[in-house]
Structure formats: C-alpha cells, structure tokens
Length: 383
Image 1: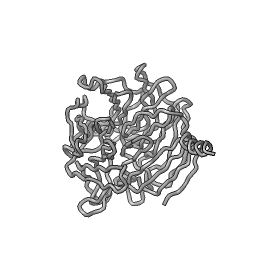
Image 2: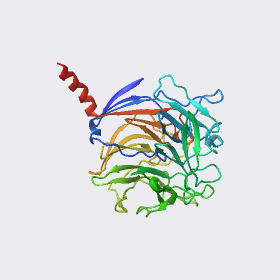
Image 3: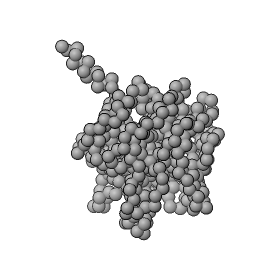
Image 4: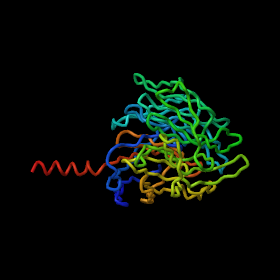
C-alpha cells in the first residue's frame, strides 16, 4: 500500500514501512530544485530470513553499493528479547548482498562475511568497494579499516588500509573531494565517553595515513550526522546534532550544527537547531541537505516507547533555513546508513525504538522537475 503526499512542494509516494553514523555520499550536481522534485518510496525490500526465522533487522551495520549489489554487513541486535526484558545484545559478522537491478534477485547470505562481528562503524562508498572504518563489539572499539570488494562475483576483504589513529565507534564520516572526514565517536566500551576527534584521509595519498584536524567549536559528541554539500562557494563538511556523554553517566542530546571548510581549514557554527541525533543525511541538488528522522530526546526503552522521531527536514546551506517538511507516516530508523546509486538511495535496516530493529530497507528515488517536464516536452514536440 502506498500513499501520495504533497508536502512543502515535495510529492512523496510513501509505502508504510519500518525503516545512524551515515554512509558518506558526495553531493550530487545539478539544479538546486528539491522543492519541486518528486521522491518515491518503496519498502518491499527486506533482509532475508536466517535459520528459518524471520529477520528482526540490525543496527549499526555497514552498507553501500558494489556495482549493482546492495551490501549490508555486520550490525547488532537483541535476538532473544528486548533489553528491558533481559535480552542480550549480539554482534554479527553476517554479510548480505542483493542485485537491486534484477526484480527476481535473491539475497546472498555470508554468515562470516566480515573478519569478525562488528557494528557502529562508518561506511564509505568508493568505486573499488565499501570502505569500513572503526566500529565496536561488546568489549572494545576498533581502529581497523578494511574494504569490502567483489571479484568475479565473490566477496573479498581488503585489509591493506591505514588504521585510525585511535579506536572509534559511533562516529560519523563523509566523503568530500576524494578525502574521508570522520568526526566524534568514542574510544572505549567499558568507559564510554564522547570525543572531539576530527580526522581526514586523503585517498590520493592514503599511505600517509589519517591526519588530525582542528575540532569543531563545540562539545564532544557521538551519534552525530554528517554529509558534504556546497555552501555557495566551496563544498564543505556539515556536522549535525549527536549526543555528549561521559564515563560518569552524564549524557545530553545535542541539537547544534557546524560546517567545516576544507580549503580554509575553518569551522563555523550554524544558526539553527538540528534535533536529528543518530539519524541520516542526504545531500541533494547544489545547496540542500535532506535530514531523515533522529532522536530528539532519550526515552528509556519499554513496550510503551512511542518510537523515534519520523520528521523529514530540509536544510538550505546558503539561506540557513531549516524546514520541517513532513511527519512521515512511518518510523524512520536510526543508527543506520544510506547507500546511494544515482537517483536511488536505500536506508538499510536500523533501529526504530530502543533495542528494536526493523528488517525493512527503505528505497527512495529522487525525480527532478526537469525529468518530469522533459516527458511533457517530448510529447509536445511530436504534435
């Protein structure tokens, strides 16, 4: 079942579905006309059953495209019971992939697809494969960086990548001008504390390793959201929200935002509040950022939890205008990633309530106004 919504100039065809860190996606070129675009949504793609049981979904998995194959790997969930009922959190090394261009394609499942169980790292889509950065299991955070590749239809793990300067999980990463930027996160699992780390890896000189950059002019954070977009002059790194937390139990949800200009090596605080902690971000056009969902406040998990925020927001990097486009009629998952292929993007599995995952994968397609008008124009020409 689907519903057609017109919201703030955007028409959405929305399927009813259950849909952090962010898969980093470079901004798309073209006219900045998101306000007149159509976005179609589909929720028919789901993670496959495991061991004869329906898949409950995973949070913090790595994801991205290798060619036409959507890959989702690792992650963590509560397979037996929710945490408030004594459920035990489990980390996975399972890797799933499916060819999204073939209507009848089936998922391939590799139970030991990753080198070890891992979740809450960052994913970067590169031409050669999906770069997986950091992450954690129940005991520790990791510095490891490796790439999921596919050769002759077989998954291969390339570990010949420079490790992070420190272990990091629950950070946020973005690809910008052939450089990977990673911000925030935590170094430990036993004494969890947010950091202000900001590192860059130049893919053209990756053997030189990661370089430390000046941190943003705000508090430390994990579970932040980031993407790259044009500010009118340069393509910049945008950092939104997250939460500050310390080993003594202090925790605060953050709504501030910052923009880093790589050319100037400077940060600037944004003049808006972004309640999007652990959500996802998607650059569109030349100056828009689409922010999907998030956790505006921390509510303990229970059977009565209302679910995370399902607001869709639009931020304009030049006017600094943030608009709540619509409250979506479906839960939008957090602690997940976006995988992008042309005008299509996929929000893969994730967490819809504390401890509760969804197996649904949200597929969205952005249809520009030029494409819509082009169809009409061709008809006029034939007259």
